[in-house]
Structures are given as C-alpha cells and as structure tokens.
Amino acid sequence: MSVSPVPSSPDIAVIGGGIVGLWCALAAARRGARVALIEKRTIGAGASGGMLGALMPHQPVGWNEKKRFQLDGLLSLPGRIAELETATGHSCGYRRVGRLMPIAHPEKRRQSAQWADGA
Ligand SMILES: Cc1cc2nc3c(=O)[nH]c(=O)nc-3n(C[C@H](O)[C@H](O)[C@H](O)COP(=O)(O)OP(=O)(O)OC[C@H]3O[C@@H](n4cnc5c(N)ncnc54)[C@H](O)[C@@H]3O)c2cc1C
Image 1 (cartoon, rainbow, N blue to C red):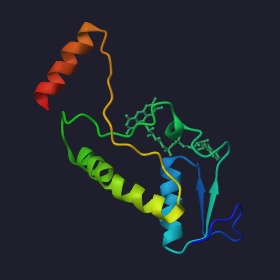
Image 2: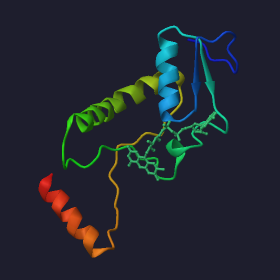
Image 3: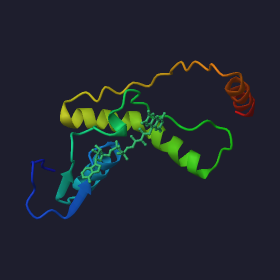
Image 4: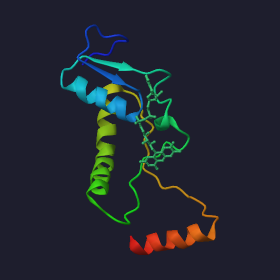
C-alpha cells in the first residue's frame, strides 16, 4: 500500500476524508486498489473532527440488528486502532471513556429514567 497526494489512474475515488471515507479508502487500498481520496477542506473537517469526537452505540432501548451491527463495529475498534497505530507509527488519540451529560429539562430526565429502566 502506498500513499501519494495524487495517485495516477486510480481504481476508486473516495469523496470525503471523514471517518467513513478514510476507513473505506484504507480498506480498498489494503485490497490492492489504487485509491484517490478527495477532500474539499481538510481531513476530519466534517462531523468526524467535531468537538465531541465521540463514537458510541445508541442506547440499548429498542435493541435491533442495526444497533447490534453498530455495537459489533465499535467493539472491534480498539483492535483496528491498534493495528493502524502500529502500521503508521501515529497515535489516533483514541480513548474508550464515558462522558457526563447534564440533563436540565424535567421531561428529558423522565425519558432518560425510562431508557435506563428499559436498558
Ligand atoms: C455534535 C455531534 C455529535 C455526534 N455524536 C455522535 C455519537 O455520539 N455517536 C456516533 O456514533 N456518532 C455521533 N456523531 C455522528 C458521527 O460523528 C458521524 O456519523 C460521522 O463522523 C460521519 O462521518 P463521515 O465520514 O460520514 O462524515 P464527515 O466526518 O462529515 O466527513 C465528510 C467529509 O467530506 C468532505 N466533503 C463533503 N463534500 C465534499 C465534496 N463535494 N468533495 C470533497 N469532499 C467533500 C467534508 O469536508 C468532510 O471532511 C456526532 C456528530 C456530531 C456533529
């Protein structure tokens, strides 16, 4: 796998250097494709580079196959990140942490209590 600013005759063009585009580009390159990653601003300029930088599964309320798929993906993340850091020598800054979210509105508190019970 080689990385250059403008690969000649790419097999695949990936538009957008967010988490989805970057993983797609990497997966395709690892399968031997010549990939052009096209980003109009900077890598991580969109939602993936936001202040929260959080990727987490939905609440377990209303658990379904889609949520299972997302959770499986997230559970595989530490291993994928470790692979990436070993391959590149760069830290991804990934941390598996919780976060505190103040719930000011009484109705939201009631709903959150319901979700907690349902979980
Ligand atoms: C405040 C906030 C909180 C969030 N919290 C969570 C959470 O708790 N859990 C969770 O799972 N998800 C969360 N998300 C969602 C998650 O961040 C996004 O689903 C994910 O980052 C989207 O990644 P992406 O690669 O699809 O898009 P982006 O990261 O937005 O990347 C798209 C990229 O495409 C580029 N682009 C756009 N148009 C073009 C073009 N025409 N040509 C070239 N480049 C282009 C943009 O510049 C950008 O860099 C949150 C999002 C936000 C904003």
